[in-house]
Length: 113
Image 1 (tube, rainbow, N blue to C red):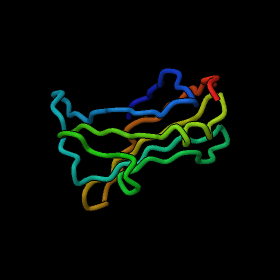
Image 2: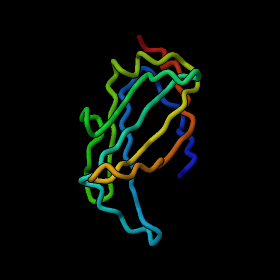
Image 3: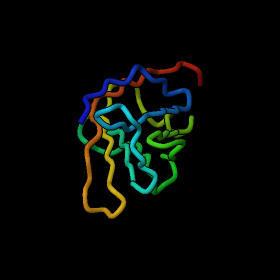
């Protein structure tokens, strides 16, 4: 599991993130048949936004490479502050779930209406 700190992200813009799952030799792992979930939660643990392969907000773009995308309207629902995040990966038969990352996401007020 990785402890990740995202750079400050605006609540007045859409947010696209691209990541990669690699093995110990830095080779990409085929995750095409796996499921992923990325959640943004408030400081009390309440879910604010969810991207997953199930809801189509996480997609696979290449072997071992994934992306998530939150629209401007979704990001506008986040007040300025720091949110908790977590990313999980579940294998293709659903028998094992790995916590890939946890960490803070600072949201800044993008000022533009």
